[in-house]
Amino acid sequence: DRRVVNMEKPDKKPSVGILRLGYDLLQFLFSKLNKLVDTIVFSKKGSIMISLIASIILCLGANYNQIGIRLFNDSTVDAQIQDVRVEMIYDSSKYEVSGVPSTVTVHVSGKAADIQLFRSQGDITVVADLQKYGEGSVVVDLTVKNLPSNLKAEVNPATVTATIDKKVTKTFTLASELIVSSDHKETDYETPTLDVSEVSIMGTQDQIDSIRKVKAVIDGSSEEGNFETNATINAYDAQGERVDVVIEPSQVKATVRLKNSE
Figure 1 (cartoon, rainbow, N blue to C red):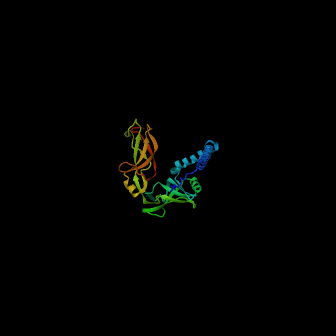
Figure 2: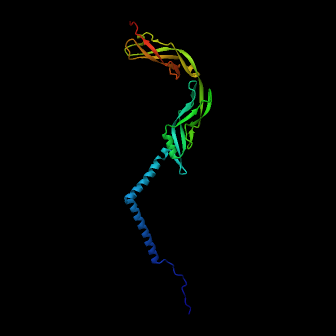
Figure 3: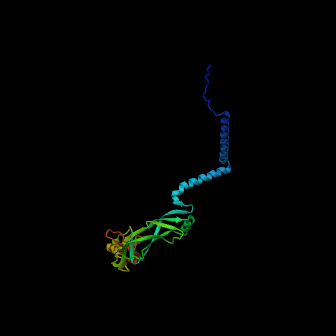
């Protein structure tokens, strides 16, 4: 008789013992990890450490853009300093300079301690040295004043175009302008007497050409009778705006008398 023999291979399934061992191992590791987290979170030292780390992260995130410092190779930083004053060096008695900004931005790089020391020594100043130039339009470099050798600096802008005008001097006849109190009119007074009749004015040719009148402004708003005072002298253009020039003398003595007064 022929017998039929079942040749199928039995299924290979992991034993219950191996599964149980793996489950117990995972449960053990999870239990240890859970206890470690509890120890860190609920212990005093752990809480302090977590708070400290969180504070540092928040502080760096909040102030990174404000302090403008970028780290390089663990030792060098780059600091951006805004609104740095520009100092012009030139002969102000002979020339008038325009076109140079009053403030600029400076990027300083070096060790953080060196930058902090440089900043603590006083206001950082940028210099525009125009001493070697004469009248005309020139391109001048802007440099950081007294920069230590262990620091590097870049000025923005690094160069500017400056216009140098030669000053000229001209003599002008002096007029007077009387300011009176509310109880009087200017016609109540005689023409004020000034101790000088002419003044010398120094400025650029364009400024001198724009002057239409030079006045000694006499403030008599608190006066009732005859009085003497020092009057400030101003130069004015055709629109009645003050012209920024050097006037010599800058003040004059004025004597003012009421009409028909003894």
